[in-house]
Amino acid sequence: MIHTKNLIKVYRVPKKNKRKTLKNFLFPSHEDKIAVDNISFDIEKGEIVGFVGLNGAGKTTTIKMLSGILTPTSGQITANGYIPYKSRNKLSMDIAVIMGQKSVMFYDIPAIESFKFYKDVYSISSNDYKERMELFIEKLDLNSILNIPVRKLSLGQRMRCEIAVSLLHNPKILFLDEPTIGLDIIAKQKILDFFMYLNKNFDTTIFLTTHDIGDIDKICERIMIIDKGIIRYDGAVKELENRDKYKIVEIMHEKDINVNEILDGIQNQILESQRYKTTIKVDKQEVGNVVNNLINNDKIVDFNINTLSLERVLQDIYINDQGESS
Image (cartoon, rainbow, N blue to C red; front, side, top):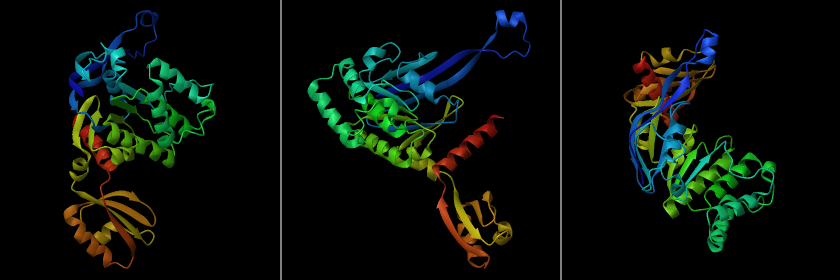
């Protein structure tokens, strides 16, 4: 469905020059900035793939190349059989690109008018249009907001409409760039449930970038981690979570105690320290010893043992990669 090989994108940007001379103003120098650095991956039909990384890692640039908005500096891309930047018009009939902070609807008129406009743009038949609108109204709860001007909608209401209007032509591939940014828990869950419904019932391929790791955990089985334009990990979310050998222990205790004294030499990393609560990371092999020490101490009020969260694993990867590259 999506295939990339040795994909590179280099931007030519003005070089910062501390000397503000007339020559530098008239003839500014430039430098190359690598946004995407020789990445290769394949995504099969019906996959939901999470694509994560820090700001500036290359996420949005990759999406723009995959969807034909940007031309790569070098490398190969095909999406549903098309080379995106060469066949953008044809590919646009098979894909949708939804960006959380970009709007495709008309701001000052009722939302329904945008749906009618895109019906004509994509030459959607009246029967297909009716069928899809019924689906959107049911799954995204649009009935009460379609006749309200877009500018008067809440962020959650607008995003539900944005998603629906972007999917009106029933695309085979869905590129999502921060689709739930700024949404409350209820609005976010409704939208994520809808993406899962599309994947299950229409075999829609979904490529999701987000800073909200909870979104990845909920709907993705596969995750790619990009850092400084390079893919650091590509595999199953579950394997990524399980590959770390640590557990998280939350310890509730009386005020101002030294947890390390209670642990009696057990190696650990303190992640958070408060007056009545300390959170540590310990090797799985040491959990039994930690529990014994906590149970036998009358200053310990309670404790919880948790698996390492996906967010914490990603933080460790970023920290390790930065350490290796320095």
